[in-house]
Length: 424
Image (tube, rainbow, N blue to C red):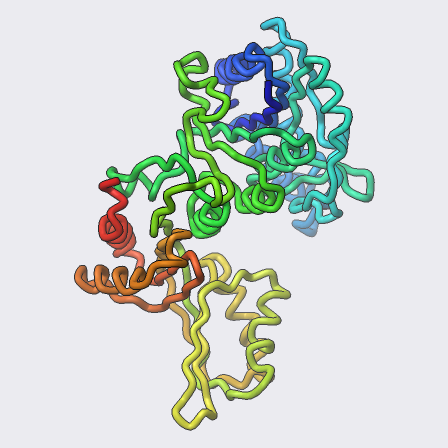
């Protein structure tokens, strides 16, 4: 017998038939004698609909301001998960399974007061553990908790993944199964490279890089939580037959296991290729090279909640001037330019330039720590294809390369091949 947390995303619970299919997956684990908690998202498209209602209300009421109370926003958008949890509990009860729905505040899942993007501070899992011990399935509304103001607080987009991993840590689950519309984590996007392979295992650090660099399988915060609390996490498909052979395998179910790297016996040099579209590059030319200038540039950007990624600095021969180049998401370009123009007098640059339509392609693998020449192979392969590199950043387990957008798919396929990911 094991204690399992199962999480089902929006596409998995998109309608009543799919909710019934989810119930069959849950029943399989209950029939095997496991203690089970389930975390659910809102039905596919429902959160967007609710958000649209919130955004439309100021206009509908003739309000002079487009702004609204973030606490009421959370009250509205959290209702999607509440509906799903109740429907799944009813479906399970109809199968003879003792089940009860739980909202975040009932557990409680305690968060900070950043409504709309709250972070989990604490979860008291004692009551759920007690109920699971009595054979009851807890069906938990994901994406939500309760803030210090005693009001519902939502965790931001993808927050149900975070809810599931956090609950798994709180109840000391043996594993957390994230059911989605794909059957695991692949070496790269199969839509770009048909030879992409599903990985049997991937280390927490690698998955964190994959998620933050463009892979949409898991939300970044959920991977961070899993790594900190060492929650063994499986990415699985909810669309496979719940009763198919191997689906109930306790130790090695179908899908991809995200785990500590110590569990991975044969570590590959490169595990996967990720990419992020819609990158933009901003360059400040002839900046005075003096102490504090970097803080004067990146401090205001951070205060404006702009995520700066790749940073390249070129200092003039006499050391008096420097060019500072960095990337931001495309959607933050105008905001970034406005912030930097406001800091021009303090920073002291001559001119500001920007370029859009760029793509960041990343090579990821924990085996890179002990192997030389990984970066050189990437640069040589891209050069052979006539792909110009605009910027490079590296870490122990990652190489990120900035290129022109039209070359994205060619670069991904080239790097996937050069490291033999299509052959293993």
